[in-house]
Amino acid sequence: MSNWERLVWNQREILIKGLLVTIEVCLIAFAFAIVGGLILCLVRMYVRPLRPLAIALIEFFRATPIFVQLMWVAYVWPELFGWPNTFFTAGWLALGLQSSGYLAETFRAGIEAVPAGHREAGYSVGMSPFQVFRRIVLPETLLTVAPSIVNQFTVIVKSSTLISVITVPDLMLQALKLVHVWFEPIEILTATAAAYILFVFLVSAAGKALADFHRRRFGLAAA
Amino acid sequence: MSDALLEAINPAMFWEYRLVLMRGLAFNAYVFFSSASVALAVGLMAALLRVNRAWPFRWIGTLHVELFRNAPDYIMIVWVHFVLPLLLGKLLGQRIEWPPFVSAVVALGFVYSGYFAETFRAGIQSIPLGHLDAGRACGMSERQILWRIVLPQVVRRMLPEATNQFVSLFKATTIVSLIAVPDLMYQVSMVIQTEMRPLPLYTSAALTYFAVIYVVAGTLRLLSERWRNKIYA
Image 1 (spheres, one colour):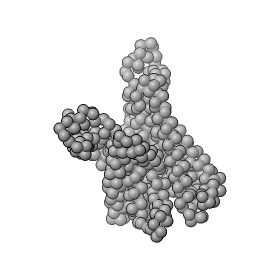
Image 2 (cartoon, chains in turn purple, red):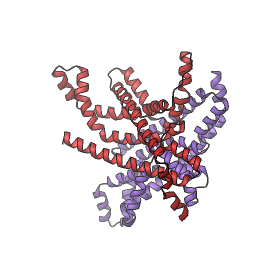
Image 3 (cartoon, chains in turn purple, yellow):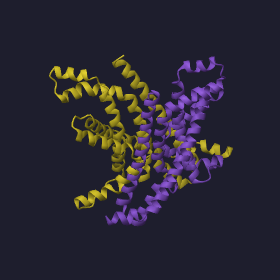
Image 4 (tube, chains in turn red, blue):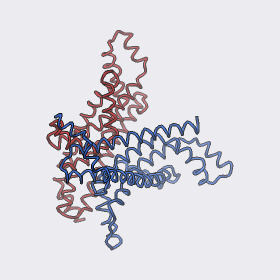
């Protein structure tokens, strides 16, 4: 028990600092992924000339491993585009890009699931196509895909362990640093793994609760 | 920027090192097939525990699924590589070591067994109870019912979902380079250390992975669709 106290409890400030960085990166990446995914999806569905580009981007983000994408964004983009200039930015950018590809497909499934009659009802009361999209299609879509979006957040959290490789000081990196200082991995790594599992479990439990709530409240099947 | 872009898409360097890099990609495939076997076997066992009549078994199965489905694969690989040998060594009273390849296969296999268990369970629960009754009525044992009636149907039903998980598993094999398993990413970073030119190498690596995953996943989806259509229309 003393080992746990010495290696985990007494280092709690370092570990919590790491956890906060993890949460920060994940939230930024999540927001970026939702906006980016929505834009990619809308371009794919409604902007004819840019459609092949959007499809290529979506497929590339979806079919490339997150680790490879992370290294690519962190080491190739700065030379290619002069941005991102910090590893922190590269971290959330790579996580966000990967998830934006997945979310674009989620949004598309949600938009296609809106019954045609709902749109026609909007048109028949004189709404413009933009109004129909903003007032009818988008709210319905967000409702149906909300649980999947929460699930995507768990994917971001799981992948965020990898940003420690490009020296973003997240929970994983702080834990590995402590292991290098003390040379006693058992307690530190077990506690870190448990923290991650608990965190992801809570998020996915929230997603499940949300899905159940939507099913009961609005009679929707999970997307 | 245009110079950088030209350098990034210039495959000359990648081509120069093609032998060692392709060996790395083959190692990715090797890790993938090994951990997929572990994941399928353990996942099936966990799924059978979850649909068991006795609650302690169900409880263990649920614990397994929740534990491994919510675990990030990187920390599981690190844990299995650095912590598990120490724990086993303490238990057995001797020094235990194994190569990074074993850690990678065990960790990825167990993490993905959680996902496969859920897929198997959904497949098992979608089999109508009448099929089981029919089996019992002609005098089959529970084991025969499982292997001859339930599992053949489950495998067909879970194929689309399983394909997605195989793709995720293959993508996850790239992180085994972090514990020095000589896969493609590992070889790429080795070459980058000697050549100091990340631009063309990381870009080509990303494009290679994209091409492999895109083509293989597409083929798998097509094949499984055809196979499903052939067997029951």
